[in-house]
Image (cartoon, rainbow, N blue to C red; front, top):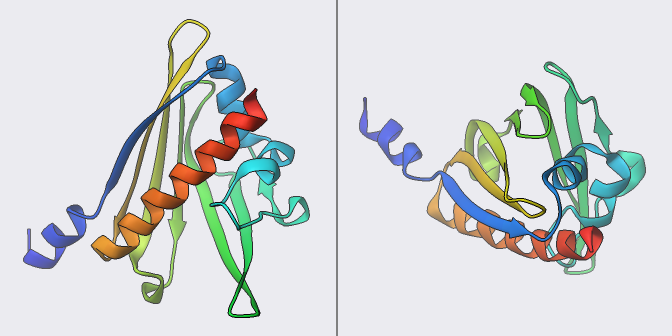
Length: 155
């Protein structure tokens, strides 16, 4: 492996989060557009329902547009991914092609593993590789506040 490849491998996000809800409900929160619209995106960021497309199958779309205001201007962050692994309610993997200027490599994989804890769920999220430690940290923070919003949707 070359040095640049090793650097990108070090910018992979791995995090665990437990939810006080059954695995099937947590999984559905990632595949149901109405639920995604209610929680997806960091605090201060919305994901309008009319801009979410989920085709829950291998080869299907997993698309959202996050919108926010910054310095008085409307900003958008599109996510255009394709589902590559789909095993409800335990595993969802999607791959997103991205432009290099968003702080990432040309392709980011999102792997979501849902572990049944007997009425509760442990989510293990792996995402990357990202092009920089800064973008990885920003993504970690974004997921953290998104999951706080998800806790409220699942309650």
